[in-house]
Length: 138
Image (cartoon, rainbow, N blue to C red; front, side):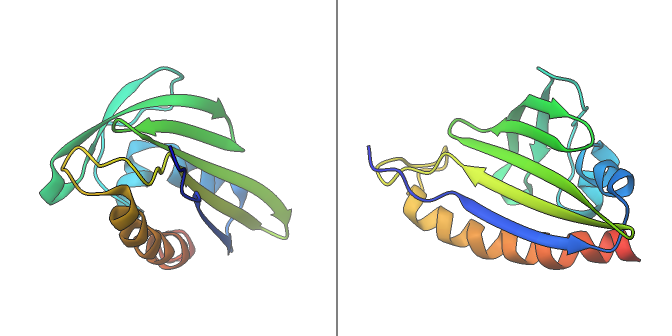
């Protein structure tokens, strides 16, 4: 199996870590900048991402270290991590890591990971670097 590079997006947000944590680790927060969901910040919690045209995606919280890191499995192959680092002066560094990509795998919808990874890379660029800061700095 040939693995593909993880997607990694980092942005510095003009908001304290507690505020960024609420955006990254609550259902309401995640809905505001990414997508509707049934998330709860409980280790082992099964939840759903409502992904619009692609239906509902099953997820499970696998990492929880408030207010620094949260991770979850997404669908059958992917793992997502939100890492937060307090920078001082009311600023927080937010990093998204989307892993689980393999050249020989396809999604539940039959699309090759090689194609979906490229689409997701562009989508995460806008979501992390525009939508999240816009929500938090409003």
